[in-house]
Image (cartoon, rainbow, N blue to C red; front, side, top):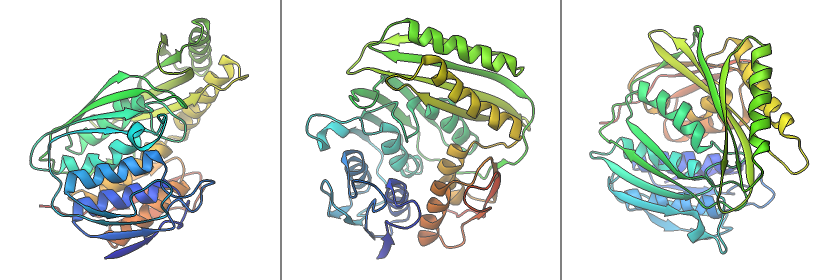
Amino acid sequence: MLTIDGSYGEGGGQTLRTALALSAVTGHPMRIEHIRAGRKNPGLRPQHLTAVRAAAAICGAQLEGDELNSQALTFVPGDLPRPGEYVFDVAQAAQGGSAGSVGLILQTVLLPLALAKEASHLTIRGGTHVPWAPSASYLIHVFLPTLTRMGTQAQIELERWGFYPAGGGEIRVQIEGKATLNPIQLTERGKLRRAWGTAVVMNLPAHIPQRMANRARNVLAEAGIQAQVEPSRLRGAGPGAGIFLFAEYESGSQSAYAGFTAYGEKGLPAERVAEAACEDLLTHHHSGNTVDPHLADQLALPIALAQGKSQLATLQVSHHLLTSAWVIGQFLPQALDVIGKQGAASGMIVAKGTRHD
């Protein structure tokens, strides 16, 4: 049994999710201690507990320590990942509901189910657009198209938006299974093919998304980028606001995608929210790098499991990325190398890949 130190690196939930996915894929039992030791409220919070139980459900794992606030967990897979129909609801692990990220729960089980022998259908309820997690929009427009290049077929339908802190969102996911994870080369970027996005509010006045959209279009136009940014006003469980921008670049005969997000806060003008997302997009655009920092984090595991050598050039070596690489190394020694120190202005990720039959 592997023992993983959950306090290593950034000491957050990324260590737990990566370890759960790898344990499910490899069948290797593991115990993780000091879970989320680097956070203000350490231990398993509702979204982490939901991810634990989701990973256990797909491979019949035996669990010890699967309760709220637990700082130690034993996870012993009982079988290979099993395709099927699953429902995962963060609210079931939290009294009074939760905006725990549906995207982080999906990323825990996506690759194990993609490698399963048949298709799976998931319903995941919670927060679809929350800070410090990949939004459902980012997964749809950036992460999944990149995985498609690697041979994974999955689709997400955004049924209901759910902002922090109320949650109440829902996604439905179809994962085809029988994936062969091919290596990917994302080191050179061509011309910008298009830029687009949406400015969204929930239970707030209609002028707010319009102001965000207008400001984003103007900022990007001043930089020479013509972007389609549409305003949208929704009704849901609780108020929220955000802008979600995307860029598609030439990458050989295919495309490379990047995404940039900013959320509204009380007292923060809509124009400032738009400018924050635009600044991130323009920083990435002018850097010439292929992979945005968040995508680099999320691709570490797929390229480590791919059947061949992959290379990614990223704008920044994040603490998240280095932590993920360390966890991967506990299960798959020497599968992944990160070239560049934490916070470096650019970096390279190289994976030799691992065959999985």
